[in-house]
Length: 160
Image (cartoon, rainbow, N blue to C red):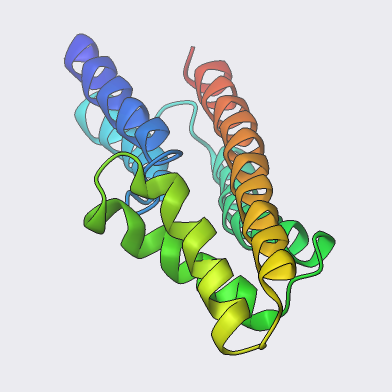
């Protein structure tokens, strides 16, 4: 049963990492799901209250990193709240409209369109905001990837 627990946990972790580039996959939930399924299939020994408190803090950090990276990226490049919302909507819709490339095109176009229509920015500023949304997205991917690796390392440390 231990082998099955490890296989299930690792598959869940891989799906979580896919969520870094495909944001409709809730990475944090798949990580926690991997921890829980491992415990349910094999054993919860080692996953004490301290383990769960640490993991909950990291889950909160994952959700915060997403929002904060987008906010900072758009704001740093002079974007407005409309640009932030446009970028977020584009990030969620883009991959469905344009598979694969939509993950990059969606937030960029969302920010640009929102800046042009809602904030009435000029084209140069709207484009700059779109670039900021991409910078925010890439920053988010790197930050979340690092946090997820730390979460998995902590899991291995506690269950060894």
